[in-house]
Length: 604
Image 1 (cartoon, one colour):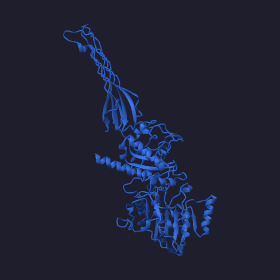
Image 2 (cartoon, helix red, strand yellow; image 1 turned 90 degrees about the vertical axis):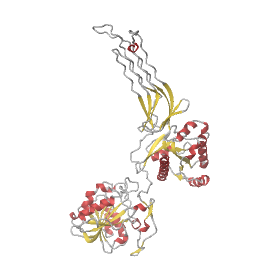
Image 3 (cartoon, one colour; image 1 turned 135 degrees about the vertical axis):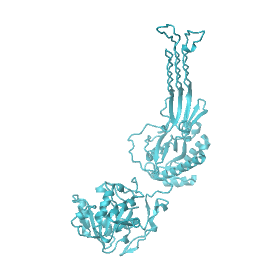
Image 4 (cartoon, one colour; image 1 turned 90 degrees about the horizontal axis):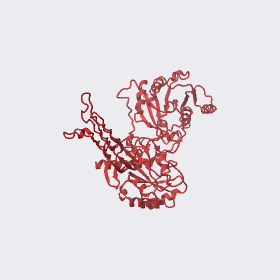
């Protein structure tokens, strides 16, 4: 909304949110216009509201109570009056500016104002950039919200002539409180103003605006409206600064998805659930059923011969790769299949036992007790028979022959295989948090996801990996693992070093978390890289990021500058506790995630 849109002597009617503060902002511009502010409430009982009305009247601003924006002519004063400009800022219902839920409201608004607007008048409808009015509200303003307003305006024979940015520079004092004093503000930065005029009948040729903003040409969030902001430097003696102001709007960047705000509430207490990515199991196949010894006796033949049936086969223990499990925590130490059923008389065989199929995550590696890889379940549905069931024993009917017509023997069912394996998950998470104890890894995971790992002021609070999911606006989910802290000489198995280092192998992207408050954070990074190199030099080929944590503490900026000079790598300064630069970190994580995906596609 530009100041130049107003002409001297214009009669302006304000409806919608923030009429009182917006009318005052217009008055302070000395535009010499007649301003009428409205309020939906018929009575103002609060002292604060009464003082506001009295304040506006002292400045010559007319205030009308009991004005319904969908039926202006019901108000006795507005029945016979016509206006040059009617302004509707931030239409919403229930504290949320949701156009799809406001169709009837907007439709009735445009029908109502058609009788209150002069023939050459204009209607200005401004939409804030978030549907709740703030930059963090979700969902943000949709690309088709402007078309929805245009559609509703057609019911009152109005057409859209232009869409312009709400020039916040001219209305810096305009602060809008929430719906009926809710604790929320509707920020004007990044808002768009839609300008409508009267028309005969909207059609395909005139309903689309002549002047448009190409938002796809914006390459980043900090979009400057210099190409549109042509405010006159001196309007009626009021000097207006025309320096370029950079606004933070929520237009989506091309090819870069944005992390979503966590809406679902987190658990109050810490969760005990962690990720099990390594498991030693003992698998026992089912025992075969025993054969039966029986002789058939009929009413006409008491010696009808042997009729003992065979026993059923024992079940196998089978590992199957599936999407419905994420780790190995559901596995017990001993996995045993069912036994086969024993044979029965009258030549009835025993039932074969069902196989015990155990789902494991896709990418599970099966090693024998010597450590050799014997199976890699890297595709959905792949199976590995860990322990075969024993065969069922034969009954005495099996041993019948011409020379041995009365066999009194049978077989026991065979025992199933009894084998031990070590199961490993080849890929536990997309991103692994690596750092020394108490570097803030668990705090960061709690900040970016709904995971609740334990946080305490002593080292080795995290002994097992915890997994959290980061959601993005293109429905992609990135798994981030909080790994136990490393210490010097971890590659020599100091403490539980080897076990902790194995977790790193199962993460595709490495995120180094450095405690910027330590004496020499650059030395910490060198130790971490050294331990990883000594354990597995191939880990150095993986994509990685560096984050300097605890930037909210004093004296950290000097150390950050020294850290940048020492390691000569990009560093993201963050505060996991306060949430500083977390959105930037998540965007960088998504960039590396997409690069990793492209590499995988090229290999396949």
